[in-house]
Amino acid sequence: MNQNGVKQNDVCILLVEDEQHIAQGLIFNLQQEGYSVIHAVTGEEALQFLEQYPFTLAILDRMLPGKLDGLAVCRHIRQNNPQMPILMLTAMNREQDRIDGLADGADDYLAKPFSLDELLLRINGMLRRSAWYRPSPPPTQHYALDSHTINLANGEVTGVNDKQVLTELELKMLRLFIDHEGEVLSRAFLLKSIWGIAPDTETRTLDNFIVRLRKYFEQSPSRPQFFITVRGQGYRFNNPT
Ligand code: CA
Image 1 (spheres, rainbow, N blue to C red):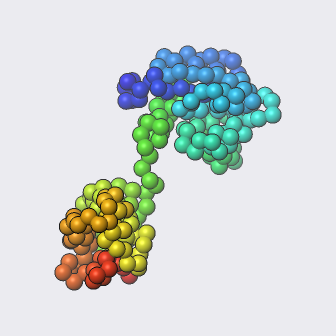
Image 2: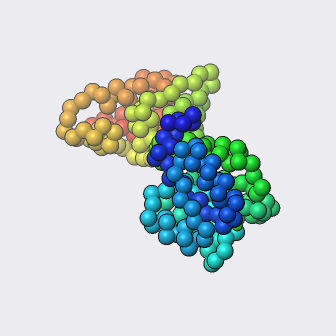
Image 3: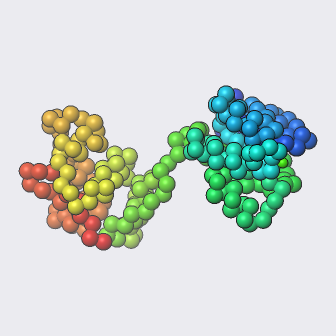
């Protein structure tokens, strides 16, 4: 592990750069960090290597000799691998060029001439954030329920005076209700969806979770407005807010 907590040996970087002196400097320094580097000079060569090696991250120069420029390589990678971190290098630093790169799927952008330290910092940051290194959380979505705001990505609930965090299963159940707002969800469906339990299993667990959700969100848990019991059928979630 290096100082960033990334296992270097597992990191293989695709470097696409036609200027030899820049490429050599980058290869040397990335290898010093412990990363493997495969160097392509053209976009065509990059596409070949992408078939052959399991890359973790790509550094793409934008202007390349041949028919495929860095943006084309970037689009190609994105079609096949939505999560690979991509850093675009360019001699141009006009706003439109940055927008082009980001629109084509680059995650970050560095204008030449760049400082090597900055490049290494960005690479390390991208690797830390990358889905390859750990599963990426779902994008942050905030959901309003009465006076509470729920971050559906991490389960944080912010209320008027308090803040709490839902457990993984509480959050899973809440998301399920939100996805099916207004529908009656049977006990069997809830048990199967959340716990993977055979629907005929008798369990109080489900009821306890409903009690917990009511305690978090209902102003009067004994007279629920949001998590409604539908006798003989299951539960229904309503959100009038
Ligand atoms: Ca170039």
